[in-house]
Image (cartoon, rainbow, N blue to C red; front, side, top):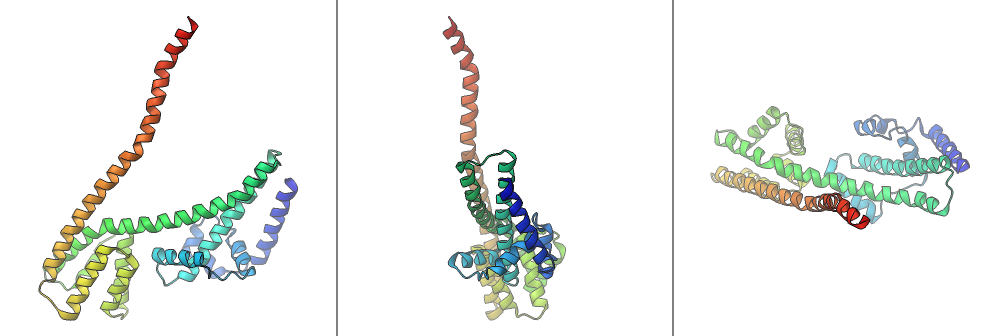
Length: 287
């Protein structure tokens, strides 16, 4: 096992020497600097380029779609390479660490070798599951913040502001760095940069992928195209609906949390029962 571990380290060192001066632009991004495996990332990107990986399979397209939903479509290529590089780095790191532990423990049986070979598959699955959970969490946070945001917008529009001006005020006065407000700021900057309002709002709805926001954007676009005095009452009605949906979601999460507590409570009950009953059983058996 020590020979295998030393061989792995030598291969990684050679790959590091070959790749250390590459991918400088990617390595300077915030995501890479915050990554726990940023040192090994040039190696994994170099391996992917060496293999001429095309990111074109059905699985790759699904991952790219998830990354686009999480980070937006503007820098999908960079996020895609970072994700696959990080995943490959974690898989390689897992194999190297398990090889070292096996060598240190002088374990070379077939069971441990199979476990070492299967561990990267588990890491592969966990990375994808974590990515899906991040996207799901983003949409949940957007849904949670939307009732508050639309209520603010209704108040400002009702006070005489245009949608664009109310949007700007919400973006400038809100310090919260949640996914929804980040998307709001992106949309505002796009409009300020000259993008048509209708197109910017449509992209906002596509990025958020939340039914309530799609309905909200539809109302705004209809007002911009046709003009209507009913927009404020309709937005106020939607705000009330969103608050009710938020309350229902909170109750649902509470019920799910209660259901998850049943098994731990049963385990605690069994433990207490054993503590109480076992001494009596032992005492009776000794008679």
